[in-house]
Image 1 (cartoon, rainbow, N blue to C red):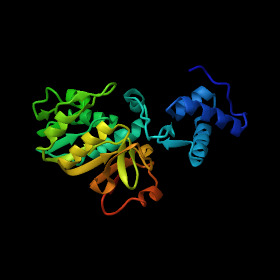
Image 2: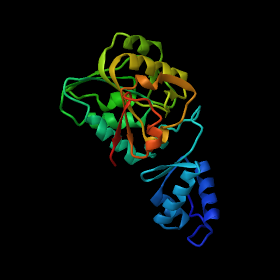
Image 3: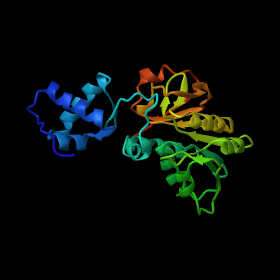
Image 4: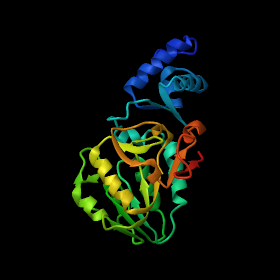
Length: 266
């Protein structure tokens, strides 16, 4: 993107309007990147983003902000998601690894970059594990590891994704009983976890039913939103691992003691 004609002397309201227009065309931006593009300091861009976040126009992340979208049907591409809330996702994965121990059976979700990052870290471990996944990226990351017994349910690959969906995988999962399901989600609120595609919701419900414990991995930008298709009630989630961006006020809206919240430190 070319340099934008902004500077520190521009009126704050005018500068923030340019920021709003930029976020209408782009999903996410890092503070340093935005400061460079707009020709202003990082501290100024952070103040502007804080103002826009207070007005509900963007959601702040540790390194910048993401655009507020209607999550009912919209979902970012895998490439965009990989560049969004990167530090938050990495912190969530580090926390998730604390719940992994030798000889466990792990079910790893599809449709979320956070699950791809988890697979990359699991591939570095030497402990024996059994992993079931319907995500081709996760399966690829864990292939050729002698300590990992890998199962990939059948299904049809969803266009533009790594997800295997459909009846063959759901039937396979009916006879699976695993220790932990590491779950991702398009959106999360105090009532349910939801997805943009009905086939994704159906597969995730089968995964939840196959696990003794369900751990949801979701960065704070996904909270207090509702996608089109309800997946499972929030009470079916054992534990939620998220980042520091989820406010205490939002957490207090969720039932207790399930799910338990674990806040990953940045």
